[in-house]
Length: 74
Image (tube, rainbow, N blue to C red; front, side):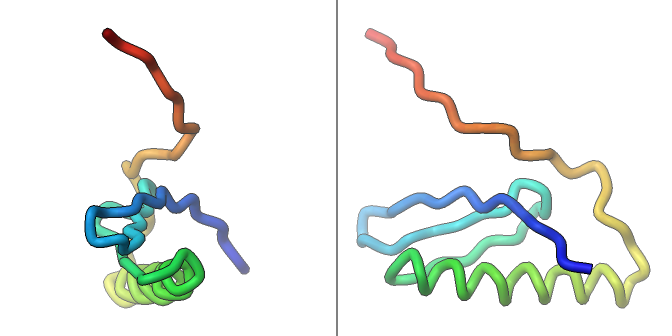
């Protein structure tokens, strides 16, 4: 069964893209392009889930991504 995960994508000062999966604490990767990042994220998520299966653990207690909001302050 295929699962879908949200990836938060940021661009750092060196112009690399960084991604993190809120539902999988510690699951992150990077890439020179968004396409490379997403390829790397798929691999990182697959490895993360493989380790959970080997340990016979479930994804639990992790946060669920809802949205990104912007706020203005002075």
